[in-house]
Length: 216
Image 1: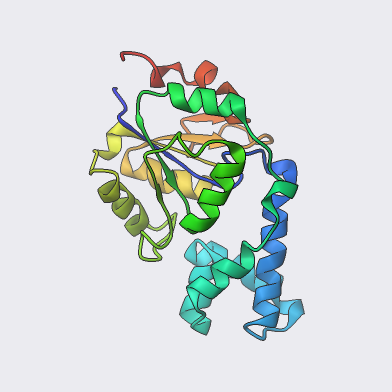
Image 2 (image 1 turned 90 degrees about the vertical axis):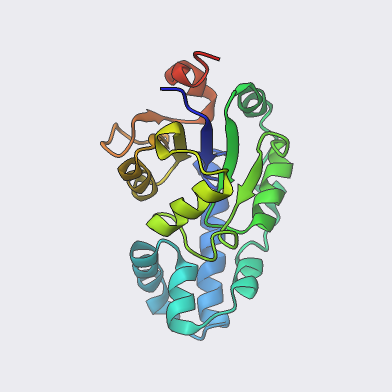
């Protein structure tokens, strides 16, 4: 199989998950739900988990049940000093630029956050574009609608020609059901049926999945 398109998740995929950034974003989500939405602090963690498991993102649940302003929410939860958590990844940059496929960021976050992350990581030139939650009209992984919109925005490749690299098994399962190759990025993960391959980080991608470079 000749793959033409690779979709990369952003957070906890393009950088290692142990740097604390996602925990910091989660804490900002909790603060938003208490300070802006007015929910009891003790109820927030379970409600966040429910929204994530039901709708794919906390934002999707807050939109449906509390009519929050998406721009206000996204600006609030991403209002962090990213350089406190991230550093340039020159090894990842070299690897990404060597890929012969068209590469896209495919994220449930917004493009403003994605651009900030990519700039700090030094990966801004490695992708053809960013497919964010706004471009998907607030559909989000793992909703089937999000994947179809991503495919359309990426030039309508066949799912069988595509790869999704993500840290979420739910997101990977939805992609695999469509026919995509799936690669799980998680340092503590074992092999799982939703993932064609499992890697601890992007540094080992070429060694683990050489098929992405073969035949070009």
